[in-house]
Amino acid sequence: MDGRRQGVPAQARKTMTPSLYGAVKNRANEALVESLDYCKWALQSVSRSFALTIPLVEDALLAPIMVGYLEARILDTFEDDIGKRHVSLEERVRAMNAIMEILERPDSEMADRKAQELASQADEWVRDEHYRGLVKNFDKVLTVHRSLDKRTKASMVKWMHEMNAGMQKYLQQPVYSFEDLNEYCYFVAGTPSGFLTELIRTRAKRITPEDSQTLHDNERDFGLFLQKVNIIRDFREDILQNEKIFWPGYLFDKHSLEPQELLDPGNEDEAMQMLDAMVDNATEHVTPVHDYLTAVPDEYAGFRQGAAINFAMGVATLAEVRGNRQLFYGMPVKISHDTRDSILADPLGFVAS
Image 1 (cartoon, helix red, strand yellow):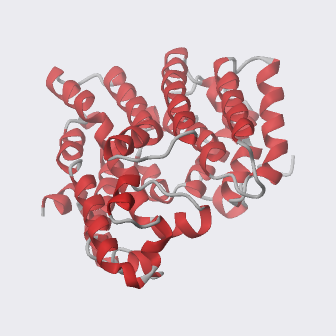
Image 2: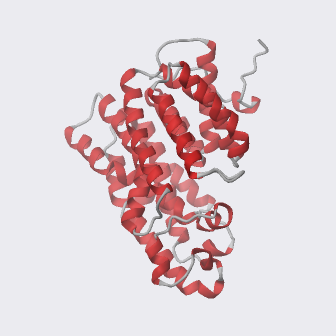
């Protein structure tokens, strides 16, 4: 052995620890350690928000969160981020269902074979290099998945089934109303929140019935809020690069415009009205998400801190995009370094202020 770990750049390996991350069974073999290291690196590669917050998460939650997120990301890649060539609806659905078959029977020869088939298609199907690399290393994610305890795997697959069904629904119909937007965001982001909440509620040793109920009541809002912030912020990119839109169609019908026409400065008044409607809708989730985070028990204070940072970044992003015409005309909308520093120091305090 030359000491290198396939798929993980040397610079990234320097920051990793060989821990088996709490929830993983104690099978200290080299393949599992390599796969865990890859998952930690990949998570930070495919998610801007997790790059900041994943080091804060407790060991007991880290492996399920990593694997759950990466498997959801692979599923979402075949639903949302395919673009190197035209991929038919039938091909997408077949790939998404294959992922679920793999997760239902992760120890089977079928799982290995289908994971290899998906990996072999990645170069042709997947445009984004980070997502492409993740699909090509599905076998490493699957190695960690196999090592999780039975209860965690069952919960993960349950929520992934709901995500898959919902994603396929919105592959075949547009988001037209705000009710559709809520449902779409639930399927793609609320289901991971449901999985995380189930982990916390079932594993926590010191959680009150009231806090457990608060987590349950508000778990959807956490995912919906973060997804809506992304949908608002990425409007121009989604139009120009991905040729798709998740802003409710009725808004465009109301103003007799096509989505791409919002990029025309001649339609600025209509664009700003629609932006206000989107920001107002996302803001409805702020109080429930705050309640959710304050109900996370102290034994998972690291997870709470990381999630609160993502939440506060979302709140700050909404403040930046509201009334900001540059969302449509090409200048990236970013929060300031001072705001970022304030969030990292006290995320929930930032939101309260």
